[in-house]
Amino acid sequence: MGNQLKTAVLLGVLTALIIMFGSSLGGQNGMMIAFVFALGMNFFSYWFSDKIVLKMYKAQEVSEAESPELFSIVHRLTSAAGIPMPKLYIIPEDSPNAFATGRNPEHAAVAVTQGILRLLSRDELEGVLAHELAHVKNRDILIGTVAAVLAGVITYIAHMAQWAAMFGGFSRDDDEDGGGSLIGTLILAIVAPIAALLIQMAISRSREYLADESGARFAGTPTGLAGALEKLDYASQRVPLKANPATENMFIVKPFTGGGIMNLFSTHPPIGERIQRLRAMR
Image (cartoon, helix red, strand yellow):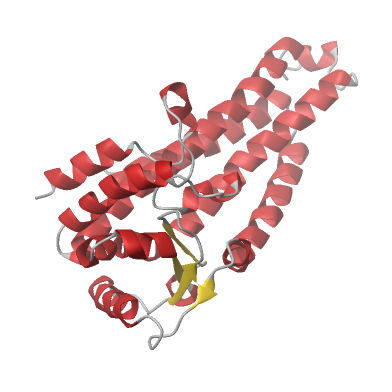
């Protein structure tokens, strides 16, 4: 299944979860309150997260005179991608990593650490920057926000259901009217948020694969990004980035290590699988 189609299907499943959960509670008003609350929180995040995250990592905007090679690479890639030139930032960190942010291609920013500039060759850096510009081109900030809104609605409804159960908000009359049993609703209130989180993480991973593919096309070859991912996987573990977990999904490689069942909750696909897919594009 293509990554675009997979994203659409997963967003559809999240929407279906909301409808099913709302129906089981028998309350359209509660579902609407949760939706408005989640929308408000994520609307703020969508419009202002770029400024917040850049400040969080002490990113410093650079000019073309200060970083001519960086600008040269991004100029070529934005021309190939057909998007405006973003603002460029350097993060004063030795850990090699990079991210893109901004609500749309006209208001985008790309940030790289000092460590990644020292570690990668020009071709590898070009592959990384192409990946980040692909996130901008594919409007992944918007898609991530939509997924967060839907997952947030499910979580808020679950909390409402748990509080209602604790304070006697369900009665036998609800059961007779088809509102669902108390036990069944409580089980759904526990399971639904976990399912929503898993789907949200799956959407994030599918967007990473798509950014790898799109970035390889912008760069003209997948070899630079494949080589960069190999170096980044090793170096980021030796020199980890002190990152806020809430921003983990933004970076080209996750700042934290983990495996096994935790891969289900990871915002990034396994590095080895990403490299394998890139090399298969030759």
